[in-house]
Structures are given as structure tokens and as C-alpha cells.
Image (cartoon, rainbow, N blue to C red; front, side, top):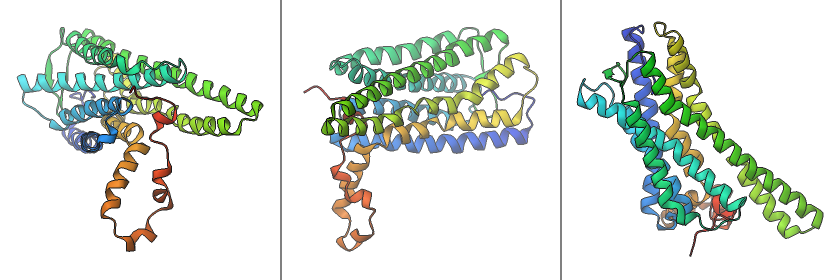
Length: 316
């Protein structure tokens, strides 16, 4: 989702187009895999993973419209620009619902998160539609050589920044603060367990802490995916006539890989791996079992998922 300026040469645009197509294809495959797993494996159709499914679905559609590339001017150009913006915003908004669910169940000890699914949809899709409509004010989509994006003056660029990068960094800050609170709570619970010499509770807390510590890195996915894009937007606003190729290269590459990063971090969890292993186990010849990894042999002994290990229980 980067703006490619006319100052770039034709060769530069070809490189950026190939980069965008390749990186977006990887994200499309990764997110499509998570969507497919959700549709095929009934045991994954629970509220905790349903949010991951919506995240993967948004990433899949965002990547798909990124792959389209080089549409003609007119309706298809506008459609590509708006749909890419809509689904990319929806993607990072779904990460805030996952963070909210984790915080509400672990820190607040609430069990009503499943009842909030309707509000989540209204929040994600409604906000994405709202900022996409606002962004269309005064903007004209034009053929940029890689995909359609706005080619307007300072007003259009300011609107673009306010309708995409402002909510993006708001989501990053919210996710980081939420995961920090969850990890701090588990640290306190672990210290309490040590003081009480409750070994069983101590083991549960350490296991939950180990799982949750990985969630503290999840905001880094959005930071890594959009830092160069943010810098590129600011640079383009200050010096609109001067484009830096390597910055645009990093902007396009990291942004297009967001779907792949999300599918690995959020989607490829214990539940998904175990579901895949159980299916493969049906067709895995016994003579090959001595070569399978030890971790796979004990897959069925692991907890249902990272969310379940943190007591994100589904309503009966």
C-alpha cells in the first residue's frame, strides 16, 4: 500500500511490481491456508479461533486485491484502491479484538466475550467502511504502475494519513498496552504461586506465562509491517517530488507480507498444528513413524490452543 511516484524509473516500477506481487502472493497463500483450516476442521470453529479466521479472511482479501496490480484507469482502479484500503484496515482492527478478548478474559475475568461478537463485526467493518469513505473525499485514484492509489496534493495525503496510519498506530499502541497488562498480571500470579508453594498452580501459571509471552511480540508484526510505510508517507508529505527507491522497496515489501506474518503468528497455533497432525496421522505409514519429530509424537498431550491455555473458554 505504498504510493509510487513518477520520479521512479520504469525499471524501478517493474521491480516494485514484482515485489508487490510476490510478497502479496505469500500473504494470500498463508492467510488462505488459515481460512481453509477453519472451514475444514470442525474443532477449530470456536469463538477464540473465529476471530483469527476473520483476521485471516481480511488479510486474504487485502492480499488478493494487492495482487491484481496494474488495473486500467476508471472503475477497476478505484475499486482496487478502496477494497485494499478497506480490508487492510479491517485486518489490523481484528487484531485489536483479539487483544481485547484476551484482556477481558484474563485480566478482567469476564466470560461474556462471545456475546460481543456482533459488536466486534460492527466495530471492524463499520470503522473500515467509515475511514474508506472519508478517504475518498477529494481523492482521485490513478494508475501508479504497481496498483491504484491516491495521487493528490497535501490535503489528500493528510486525509490518507488520518484514515489509515492514525488508526493503525492507535491499534498498535492499544495492542501493546493490552498485552503488557496481561503479561504483568501473569507475572504477579506466578509470584503469588511461588509464595504459596502451590506447585500445581505454579505450573499452570508458568505454562500460561510462557504462552502469553509470545503474544507480547504480536504488536511487532504491525510495527514491522508498517514502519517503513509510515516513514515513506511522512517523507512524501514533506518532499513530494523526491522518492527514495529503497524506502519504497521496504515499504511495499513489509506491508505486503503482513498477511503472512499474521497467519504464522495468530493462525498457526497449537490447535491448528494438532488438527493437521491428526489428519496426517491417518495416512502416515507406521514404518515412517520412527522419523517423525518427537514434538509431533506428543502433540495430543498439549493444550487445545494458546487462548485456551490462558483460560479463554468458550460459552457452552
